[in-house]
Length: 326
Image (cartoon, rainbow, N blue to C red):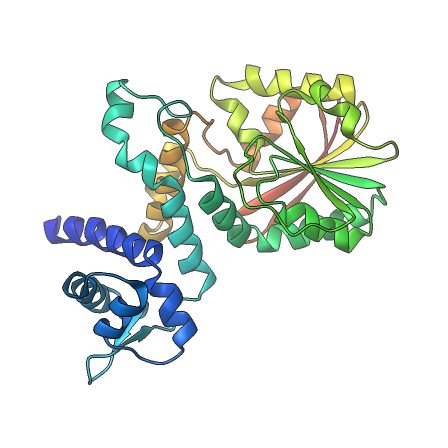
């Protein structure tokens, strides 16, 4: 039986977490390192005291592992706050909060994503970095065997993956993205960024240095599946024309069909359903599983060389920009 109160809790807890994060409460408690009263917190963060106390008390009741409250009524961050899973959920939800708040307008058609409503690029970059820690490590290990002169990260966001891969491989790292407001990695001599559309490599090819390159595409290629295979096939054709025979390592979240989603355990189902639900709302193609990707590569006329399992729920595909299979 549906417990209606849970619906209110889910909604109110997430909104309260966002408020505490955006108003610097979490940052202050993290820096303080010891319990603080709501009065001290509100004064330090220049916030309304009663409202701040209500927010902290609510979260401490609902999620004591995130915000704890001791016998003296002082607040501190719980053990789960710095865990990677919680931080990923927090920043993912912050990234897509504008989309969720605009669902009414998106459904009615009065507003469109990418024009009237936008994801928070900086928060999305932070969430992606947390999610892709293992993927970045695995990509570096795989690409090191290619001995490239440069790695080019398509849809690089903050550049965290290309920096780690370039450092591990010992080559030049180049990030390509159109999100200029995404927080970039600190400048290092071997890392640079190109403002460009990853769907149109001809427009920025001249900025890629000569020599052997390897492409990285982490959680990017599914975005071209909104209209089915056609959009993805067109993108691959452009890359084959501009960079024939080049290696591309494609990391993708293992998506699910509707039937597969329904069969998942509740915790996995909830997490996967939210992730996949956001894609049609933001004009992206829905993530696919390995079997679907094998068929897509075949239909798009590129050679799938190998597959590698990566945590927490992703697959890395080693693809060559050439026709046929190897």
